[in-house]
Length: 155
Image (cartoon, rainbow, N blue to C red; front, side):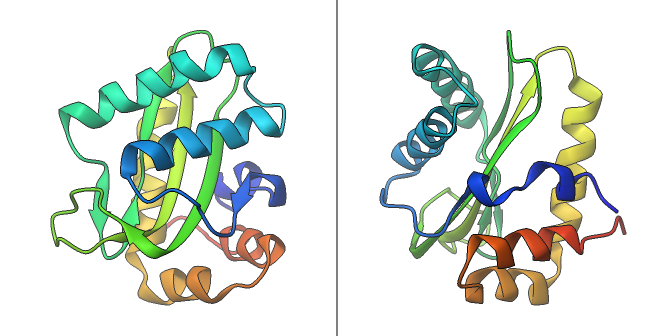
C-alpha cells in the first residue's frame, strides 16, 4: 500500500470546490481543514501564506488536469491533505495549459523535507495514470474517491 491510503479520508475530500481562482481554491481547501478540526482557524492565515508563497515561486500545476499545491509549514505536527474537484477547472498555470479539475493540497511539517519530496513523487506517479484521473472525476462519493487512493501502489 502507498502512503496515500493513510492520508486521504472521506472527511478530507471536497466533491465540488466552490471557488474558481487558484488562490481562492487553496484558501477554500485550508478552510476545509479548519472545518474538520485539522487546522485552527487562527492558523489558517499562516498556512495559507505558506502555500501561496510556495505557489508564487513556481506553479504546482502538473498538467493533465491535476494540480498539487503544497508547502512545508512551521509548527505543523502531521502531514495534512485535502483532495478537491472542480468540474469547471482551475487555472494553476499548468505546462499543458489545461485547467485543473483534480486538486490535491498537501501540507507537511517544516522539518520533514524528505517526506514532503517522497509524497510529491508518489502523487506524481499516482496522477500519471489516465484511468485513475478518470475514475476520480467520475466518482460520486468521497468514499469512492478514498477507494481509488487506497488502491494505489507505488510504481
